[in-house]
Image (cartoon, rainbow, N blue to C red; front, side, top):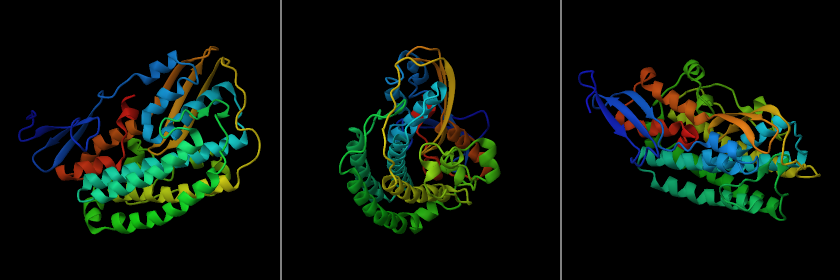
Length: 367
């Protein structure tokens, strides 16, 4: 439909569009130039924060992981750590290492999915989506071997994890990681350095360091603009304070830079998993926790695949949280996307690549 401004047309992009996901953006355009990208929330709102008030602490882990199923481990950890902070629960060292391993498996799984979607959005890359789908299977198999589930694990619980590392897991994980390191070279040569991808992504959707900070960008979308901020380094939660890894940062701030950050993070994730496996401490994998927790207030920050997720929990002394509030990375990144046409030139053809370069997960934003 035509807007009040003469010559400007409003286009509904989604929620049925194959590259919009379960979401709708309203684009204001005069034909080729995009002047507004307006997020239209609500298509996947499920009231997760309210649901948690009616679930015990353990029951609530499952719906909380639904915020971003593709990265269920990191997302679920944010909720569990907030509960532990509120109840002053100390987690055994071995459990911290096991949590770190699953979180990095989850991060690789999520980044591979993001790369596949971006390749599809750019056009001409169906093979890359098939590659990422096949390679994700290996990490889903590892997750299943460790947790018993391929997606929604509910493996992290207040006080630790549900089970110890199974026999043969270390050997299988090292074999998968060795294979995946070779695959990353193939991704770099066939996709990241491909001339067609560079034409579609380099210099497109540029976000400066100052604007990334001012608008509240999160995760690879923030680090792709040169901002060195990663909760794994900042808070050193779980085993991250004892493991050597580099923070992936790029300065260009364009679509290519945001995906280069994810690519480099997958390299670091393989290093983190290897170190955690080799340096796994002995001891218990969980601490007994009573069903009812004392009154308290807790806060946790976790670096999910899409960026910093903040969870604030209030306990009232029962077996359920009194209140849970989530600040999700996709919500913040959608706000950045909405402001981007004011900061840099975006054409209609650029919209799919620009949007997916921020890797939004709409269920995480809607909640």
